[in-house]
Length: 119
Image 1: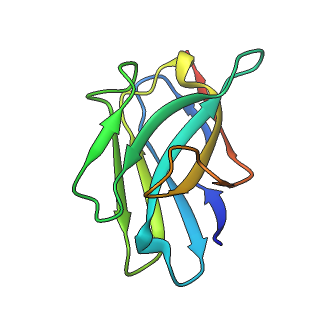
Image 2: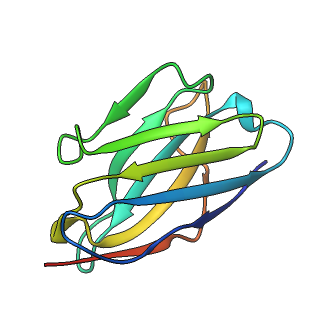
């Protein structure tokens, strides 16, 4: 089991950058595939990015590809999301999540951090 706590959200202007962090507790962080998801007001939660357990494989939603970078530091039990060239449509609550390599569903979720991008 793993507990996840996001941080780094805030209010920024369009074009700015922001880095989110997700601190994980537990001794098996390096065994999980990690992902970032977001949910805007009135919309369903959507996938943003994911990274394999070793960090070697990354995947992005088309809407953030080329602007966001997901990374992880297994020695620090921390997941990151570097967000560049932010747009108002990136405004959402951002969640980090973890799943075991052998399953497709993310079983563990943080409580989220708010990101607001003003135009």
